[in-house]
Image (cartoon, one colour):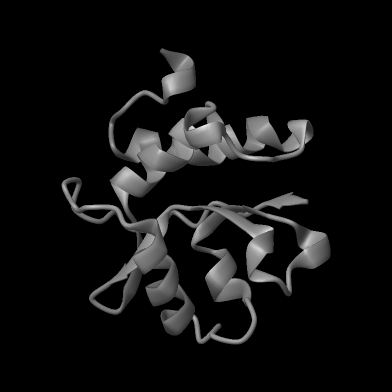
Length: 121
């Protein structure tokens, strides 16, 4: 199990809509990961199961999309991931030992947005 390294991706426009399913398809194509995940694909997510990294289902908390040919963090994707970590939409199944690191990763994007993460309210 692993939290991805913070990529400090550029931010998309704050009002950009978030459609995780469509973003995932664009990220696969951009990363040339149509058949199997790779490092570029991993960079769009906050967490992955390192023991099953060859499976798309091992990747969780997608926060990025491809805009203008570049991988960017989408604010509404970051907010959605944070909400899921907090239990929204049924939560996300992560090892307890990784939760603080996932929150730290997401908090860095909140800081770039000059926002406070929901777990700090």
